[in-house]
Image 1 (cartoon, helix red, strand yellow):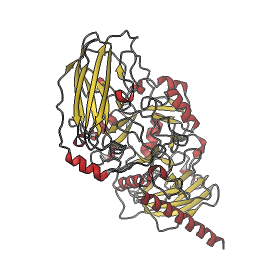
Image 2 (image 1 turned 180 degrees about the horizontal axis):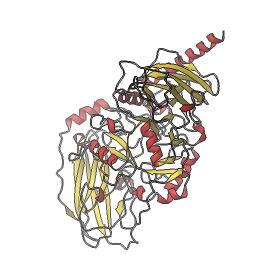
Image 3 (image 1 turned 90 degrees about the horizontal axis):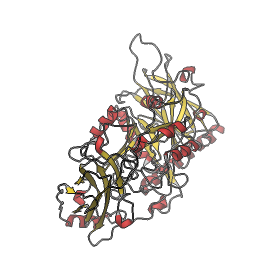
Image 4 (image 1 turned 120 degrees about the vertical axis):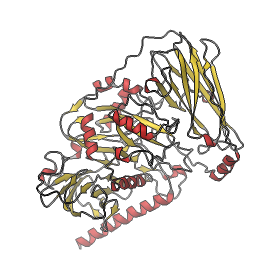
Length: 619
């Protein structure tokens, strides 16, 4: 999960048994008076002379707010540099669950809060002096990772100090801005991606990882070229690059696309708020804001502006690392802005973040199997299904949230979203996602089953996953490959039907069942989904097909949205094989033992029940 302060997100591969001091934290936090330092006026930043310095203190009541620090850049400056630091106060030593973490960003003289003035954001990964981090800097030719090179104009600039987390005893902080006039090179020349590039005109299944970070999110992360190379190895054909907050990669990835004509390089950004994260999939030159709650800024406004610029809007890891225990440990990872955004304008929702199998011992959860199902996945699926029932046609996807520095199996493509698109291009993928023609392969392209699904009505309508049929009844046929020994689980409107799991006894395997419209279903109609699973976890997360009721008298034709020649040939040929084109996705997480044990027990019971049914049929 991307973290608002920029440090590597805690995953089950990196977390060690963390002490939970919640009771003591609450008592100490309540004892600290909520005092806030006044925002300073613009401070001179002399060329080669005294820097502009700021200092203050924060308390737990300041979490999720920002300090705007104005400083004057003189004429003749060619470089602006920021450093900062903070120190926890109080008697309790900071821990990963209770420590203070502050973030840093920069806006230039064109106007604080204006997209044209945004120069970058580094969270807590750059500029902290006590940990030896390199400074934040910008020049016309080059800038620090996550920042935009460009001319240094004289006038008022602003440093942003974000209050990501504060220890129970509060903290003190300092920020220093230096202005200098070194010799610099020629101005940086942007080389953006052509958004109309078509990698293949052929319809088919293509795979994506919808949450990928690189160099501008992590100092050890790969360049665009290296990221593309690894994506290809993992089976990905669609490569969304969603760096934290910044837009600098939009200006750099053109040559990467040109050098990789078999891929679609799709620049976007992760919108990091202290109350939840989202992806804008596509460039959004009109909006680079991310500070939900600051001076009336709302994520809903950012959502509207991002979509107006042509980007898809995605809710990221909505149920991961929830509060209150993890609220300091992973700032803003849980999505708590459901009442603020327009769910009708959400295009995709990340139902799996990171690998589907995680190590419970990394969170001190002893006595469990060495690998368990990611415990944040099923709550995210349930959230998705609630939104479908509420009438919001959202497509479920997965994302690795990898920075390219994780261990093998937790990097790009640890899971994958398979998308049936009319062509391999950005516009083709967008149209497919908005049609719902996608499903999640939880173990990536090379280790997950392939799933095909078609619905056929008595009057001849045909639909694939994501489509609707205007009928009260249909026969749904599922064909899977690579799932022998696993089970199929059919659900309706988000509830498991009163049927035993269906054992997959051959490869390929075909199964059909009747689907009927329910009077109690939501505005989208009655939806049916099929997942696959083994004894450890879900192996695919299926997309729904909707029954919306009888069509008007005199209407003809098939359901809209399905690929030509896919479901139109009937259940014997549902869709082109998923494996005929490319794909992948990846990276990790973990949580509560009770939910984990319940999920494991339920899966084992399902497989045992299926096996018992198979033996009974054989007898």
